[in-house]
Length: 298
Figure 1: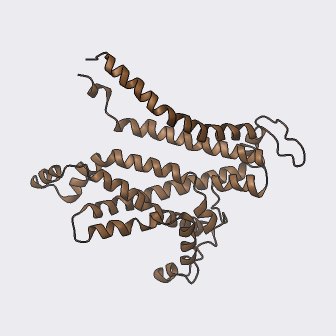
Figure 2: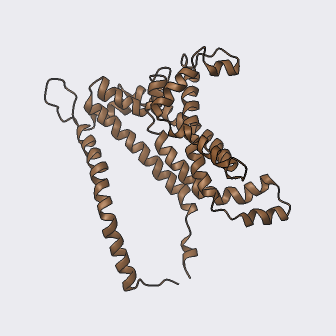
Figure 3: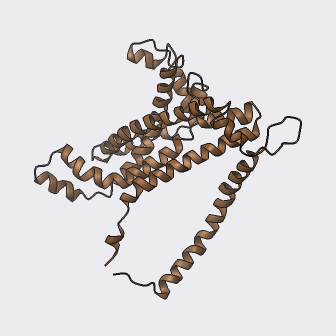
């Protein structure tokens, strides 16, 4: 049954609010002010040599339904494609890596340290590294025995970005999944093994369900990261052959074309897309991972 909060609970709640207040104020300054400034800037024109004029939502109309709609929706499609394919590959590969690193074997510490090396390499360096390896006479073509122009056409260029991003960030998923594996009691696996359950059955019935909360948090982190991907495709392909993402489009408009109002509108739209995706993810997938209210009642 429900119990009312006592004086001690109210005091602790008040103390908690006081303790998080500085962090909230800092976040409001670091995130809130730039966001409001971008929204304000997006409502003005990009007239060169003259004072910007208030044009309301015209920059948003240009991006969504006007002259810039083709570029915007193409960049949104490319960003979504990178997000889906990269996430699927990273979850599968990262989970497999975590399962291997979780096993007890000689040299496990060295394997764990070496697996994290790609994640520790800066994204710019990763892009240059993969650009060299994906050259027509590079090591990738040598290994597969084909002469593929990886950055010369649309789908090879897209796969080049996906492969490079997966190589770099799958260790991050593996690290988070490995942390989740540490909290699964080994007694459950021992009991299932005694009952005759095989390795696949134990993974499907024990490991995966207990690992889902950790896995969903890892996927959310990576989803928010890949939705704003910029440096890797920018250096690897320069946005050519259908690899321009939303973040690249924002930089092109704001820096290369000096359209600050239009760039601010694109930036705001990108933020809204990321925010809505994160909200839907938490709403429809995160709630099932939390304890139900009925379980909290006594």
